[in-house]
Length: 381
Image (cartoon, rainbow, N blue to C red; front, side, top):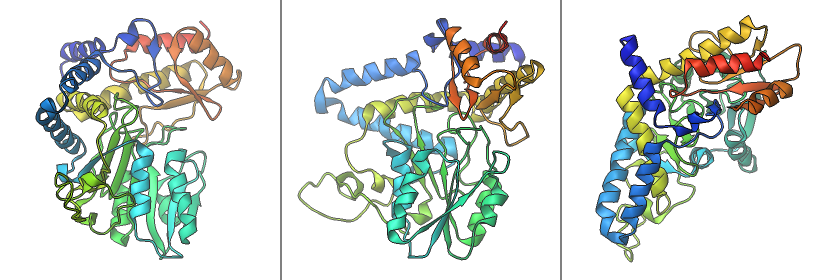
């Protein structure tokens, strides 16, 4: 892409986020601010809802459009996408739907965010073993997960990007391993979706769960669940609902036949505001191109990593090809991470503390100038 043209594109995106007028927002791995475009979309929806059922056809046409766009973003079919409440909701569908037998096991890194832990821990009551994989120098790799499997392993669950390190796992390699051995692969994608390219078919992912309030730049309370179509009838539905059956409009015809699509997992009335917010973000990603979005974010974290190391800080996130992400964690051998964090926050830099490191997570609307400001503040200049 022509550099001058690229600058204009990112400037136009930045104009959608007035939060940047006053602060440097590098905390998209936690909760993201809403764009002007998103807020306008929510206002339009609220206006439509002012007419009650009169706008129903237009509203649900948009819901269908967002579902198709979400599918296109991850290389899936629209019939493989369900809207969910949050990442945990998707994990519960996958973990509760797999038909476990006593003595089966699931392999999981010991450093997962709790959303991708407790639903699997709940399977212990069904006689399912959790096989924890401990990190080596802070990382859990595909090979380490594979080595933990045995003949009774029925599933591996892993984050596409680890929240506390920014390590991006090799999903293509892991997917090949799982598919060849008949092991279900569930991916918690909340720290990658919206920032990094994900292709569920190429990576042979069976289930994917992701909330929308982080890198997707949408609202809390909504997200996406992907289920490979071939598995729809191979897993149970933990929470059957009235919108998941074939004829939801026939209220008194209790036909307990599930839809042929992933919508079977949707339990009831959808979070319309959340779906509309997701739609704005997905449309933006598809318009810019997922590859361009990923390259932009990685260029910013690369600039930060280079500057931090020049200033004597220790970068704790992996920087190798295929391992780096939108998350960059660092610390100092001379100063407590909490002091660095406090200095950044005082200077108007919004970031996080994670595992005794400072965690930075810029997005596409952030700038190189903001990176320089963060580097100077972290160094105490």
